[in-house]
Image 1: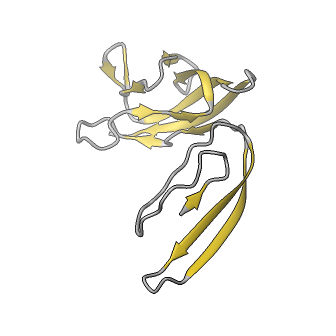
Image 2 (image 1 turned 180 degrees about the vertical axis):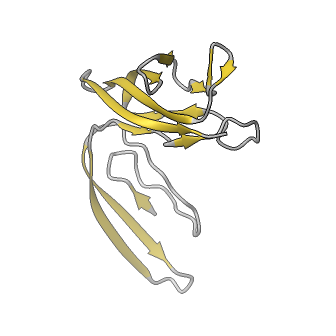
Length: 145
């Protein structure tokens, strides 16, 4: 049995399962796990966690749009964001790509032409979905072929 401590109630746990849980609110929660072996012996474990309202952005630092099916597009995974806009700039500051659609990807082209390998600047502007606070992250991505 596992209880995530947020009022969703205890749920059965089967050996070998990998569990995840999405919390609907921020705060401190106590997770309680009770296990029983095949002889009927039980033990419990609890751990307190703090769920914070954070924005998490995963930005790859390299991609290879060469048509081999591996890392052919650049995408950004964003968690805890409402509005997100990301822009790609060349090393000379020229805007190459801009999008504000969730799940959008860049294929390493500009005006339909494949770009040469190089390093590009990624600028991400986002809004925290809980607080409405605006933020910005800037990084680089390397395009290889």
